[in-house]
Image (cartoon, rainbow, N blue to C red; front, side, top):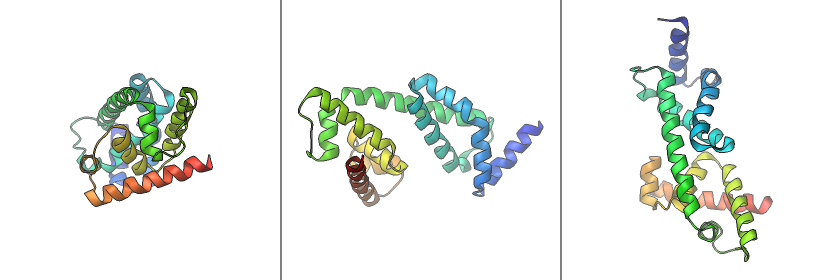
Length: 183
């Protein structure tokens, strides 16, 4: 067994124990390759960065499921690929959803732009502002408002209770509104 593999296994064990320094070391070892993998699929550096970050969060959260049948890098890459494909499809589907529909749902009909140029600018502002939300807020809003999943589906996807899902989405909307006002 190579020295690097032994060290990686040690780091992974420390990650399982919640050591943030070990997580940082794993991140530093793999982030460039994982970013490049995501970028090749989503074709946008900011989106690839988001996908990569979400993939690392997912990997650290699900690390206890890593069996060691493949290298950690291969396991992580599979997560990145799956997230990238999901993100790409989501973006593609989102582009099919009318911008007015997104703005209406997010803003509850306050301040909808009248002309097309302003609508696009507002949609861009909403999407940029959503990127600044806490992960669980951004994901829940994306699944509910953009992807069109109902509360039950979102709660299942995110692994939270139905009541928690409704509360999270409500708080996410409020957080988005506040951030939209301050920018």
